[in-house]
Amino acid sequence: MASTVAALTQELVAVPSHEDETAVGNHIEDWLRRETDSAITRDDAGNVIARAGAGENSLALVGHHDVVEPAPSQVAGPDEYVVDERDGRLHGRGTADMKGAVAAAMLAFRDAVETLPESAGDGELVFASFVGEEVGGVGARHAIDDGFAPEYAIVGEGSTGYSSPGVTDVAIAHKGRRGSTITAHGSAAHASEADAGENAIYRATDAVDHLRELEAPAVEVAGETLSGSVVVTEIEGGTAWNVVPDRCEITVDERTVPGERASLEAVDELEGFEWTVDQDLPPMECGDDGFADLVLEAADTAQTGSPELVTKPHATDAGWLSQAGTECVVCGPAEPGEAHTESESVSIAVLERCQETYRRALESWL
Image 1 (cartoon, helix red, strand yellow):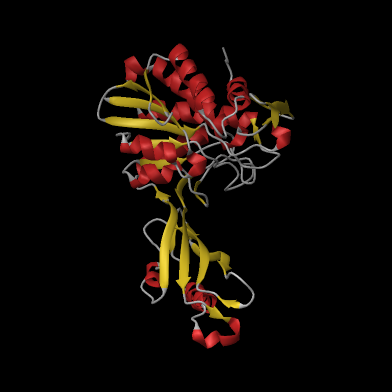
Image 2: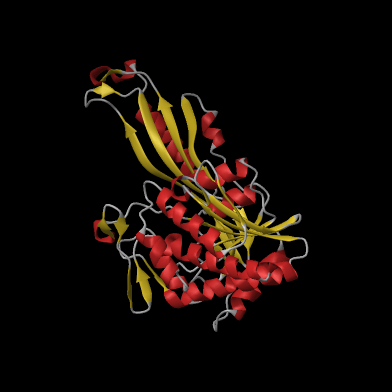
């Protein structure tokens, strides 16, 4: 039995989950059944959800157990990832993003459930670890469609090192991402008779000019400006050096903010253009100051530093939950620059801090 957050993190990280999350989902489910007296479900997508208590009010600890593809140095064999401890940190694929936070949430959930009968009132505690976060929130969306709707959620994505190095903050808003393709249509002709055709690349540059003139939205959150952006990241068109192209595609990366969107729809209304949304990860903003303050107080009590309410530049599953009506904050051990890297690691001391933060938040909420 893993008795510490470091040991449990090592167990979870060692199990591969970049192509198939089944094995690590089994490990999480088995641990919860063994360690907690809670109602546990495993839905068709592979999400692991545990519930304890009863009533209309619910607070969930939320994470995900899928990871991005590991680097060769992070693979020990066909059925095992490398995970090792050095200098007070755990190193390996998924340590920071985000099996460490999942382990901290599992332990905090277990400890809070043990005190639930005496203190619960009408509150329900929930633990949820989703699949498919790294590929567009597949698991979170499936769970929401299946009725997963806690009133409140703490999502354990990284929030450490935002206000100052080493401090675990509480993010009350984050950006979303909308990825889209603008297709410019023209008509082909031989390049020696260019006027006989309609050059789709030239038409595409008109769309680029329009995008460059768009004003990216911005909102004020937690005393700072959360700014969106619209960036053309790819352009592809043409079939041969001597043919006027009849088609040209532009890829657009748009970072969205709560409540505001750049007007990319206007391009779709222009003659000869087609606009297709390929991915739309929603932003998040917590609208309940009392809940944000509760989690901030728990984080403050769990560490010597002084955490702050901050914003986060990356989209998380909190966006899907927020869009569905759950009040969310993000609080977790990962630091900027750790996720998705060959040198990915997480501080053991910060994992322990997050476990304590989650436990205090659950008990205070009850």
